[in-house]
Length: 552
Image (tube, rainbow, N blue to C red; front, side):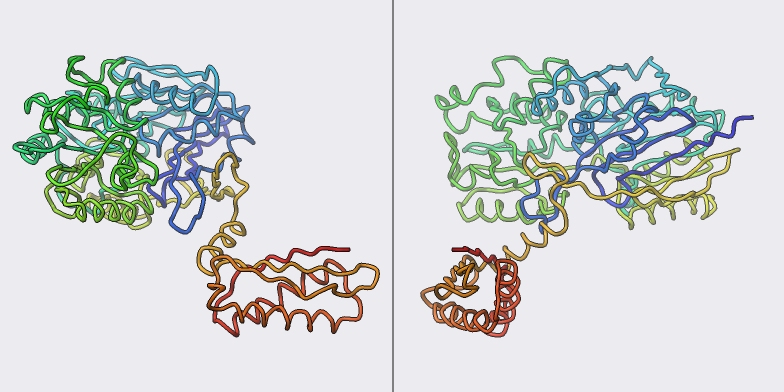
């Protein structure tokens, strides 16, 4: 009898909404489900992205049979270029998602990635011992799927972001019949989206938005700008439908919006007459009441098209009184709420009519199932074990309480921290330890070279500023040549507090002259220690001290 056990490892994606990456392992076979990125917190100065820790996958690369991706959002596929730099593996996804992945690899100059497209209506994937049956789910981006993973220990359903939307924009609802058939012979475990576990009722259909957005847009005399995330092809389709009814031309603004819209159109997921969507140069010849812009920057990202428009820095777009901006998105990622609030305030200040999240106009609906959706999924799949994914600690706990209300024993709900391992054997699950995982920060071209020390330094610089002390000393005489020169940036205004810097220079010179023998290391250490204490005593602040030691 085989001694192998089925391992489920939550690398990341359980205590945070992003960075979704999960590993299934049995004997010499391993698969990865999703590979997303996270977004930096506000205190992560200069960090562009946060990616999962791929160490375990790299250590077991000989076992990896494939990477399967559930849908086209960045928190589920954005980490692929970073993983594929070191790992040679085939990626499996639906057609639209494959288009997004290919486009992403082009950004990172990765040539000819191995991408295999499956049809969730008919295909079954065999990857080592794992037999994977994909099925359609409803989400805010088309072509999203869940997976029934047949393992030697039993069936596990892995269903990331989903809701039960019976009238989706793409007219492809959750394939409830297929799931019921797959689950009919018993389900060992369900790993599924927990993000809506505190939201009562059922999540609204995407279709409900179209009438609300049309009501806002109807009768507007100026230009209309609608912003949403670039992968929300369904929202783009609805906006195009509304513009056609109102006799307006659509203009796509922003690199991410333009590229994803083109991919979706080329692959048959976005439909419009060629003369309805026009180029920005053509828009310049039309009156404002004939224009409807779909613009990127819904999270208020500095440098995005919407940000530059609001700041009056866009190359060819302007906005002002009589124009309308519609935010059809929810500022959910870390740090995005403050950025979007800033843009909303700038627009209001410019007398723009802004429709945004705080106005309760329901111009955005979630792609995540609420309590009713979660209860329906539990009743449909009937798993023995429940694994909440894609949410935070509070979402996991709420998900577990739903399962318990529906009769699941408390011990059958597995709330996992990053790196935790669950082993399944003979129809029973057991936590068996944890692998070491850490946050990997991407800063420009650097991956993982920004850690807590660098972030701490950046935090100090942002709060307290920096003091640069230039010290010249005679190596042969072991003595100072002249008083240290002290400059500050972001610490004190030198015209007002110049005496503090001058006093610091004199006091530091005296402290160094007391030493009978000095070298570069001694000068550097004394300078940092002395000036940190001196400035805190004089100003109550602790700037970063950068000694520049010049030996003559």
